[in-house]
Image (cartoon, rainbow, N blue to C red; front, side):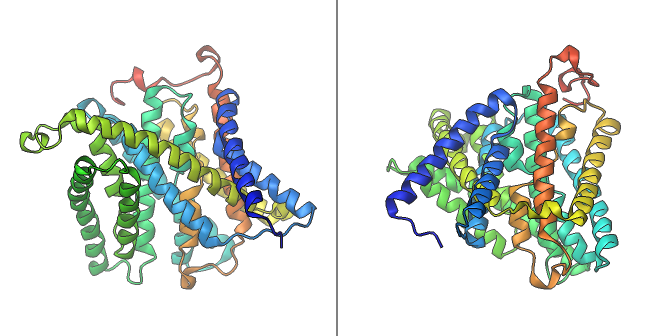
Length: 409
């Protein structure tokens, strides 16, 4: 076991943050997502540690906790980036149905692939297929800066909806009682309660932010959001809806017309809070994302690449996900395939949900190398899509941009 002094630990942490910052700069030029560079850096550090026989161990709970905090910050950041309005209704509708359809069809396909391969109960296979079917907002949202505004908005909404839908469905199918009238009623009730709570708690959080006299505001709200998320998980509520609603409320405050409410929170005051939240959220997301993907990359041993079964099953799963997305965009949404069809990354939320699979639902023959293979492969595919998009419009054959179609926007 490696023994490090306090000064050595501080130097390593600081160097990793600087490295992540450099990756963010490099990613703007090479169009490879910075989170993918972090993931590969973590894998590289693991190879160095193995080569020099340095034993460094991290708790799974540490990685999971970083993942949960990162998920909260990313969803909040997404809400603070999205604008609502009548001109966005079709965009939101299309992104929701895209997330819903691709998630459902992918989950069903992957369930039968796992069932055919492992010959284990369908319910257990479905519990594993659900996290693998969720589009990773933690990888998508930080990677879309080079895209047009229309593409950015579509992918941010789609990734956020995919996260929320995936967590809601995962919570339902990991419950003890499913597919009964009582469980379906409780499931619908939890969604309704979350929607109502999102309105009340968003206003309460805004009140705390606006009325507190202390300069230290953000981390109070940050702690309250984590408290809301954790409490929602205990009571099986989709609490990410509350966090997304809070971000949307702050970023679209000028759209409200309820005078009694507006007089307590003038737009100028809320706008200052929005700028503060946006800045600190982006910084915190960057920090959490840095250590999560480095630690997760470090936990990956490339020995699984020598196992033919992992390569075969993992490739089949990735191919199924890619085909479902490409066919939906081409024949249902009827829009361009580049680079949206390549956005199939699995990442933070997939990992977090895998940690939360109950022992009684775990697949006895499932090899975790498949999870690592899928995350690495789907991230590389997305990076390839960004490289395609790097070409000039005249060099890329597309079906037509979102901005060119009145039925999309």
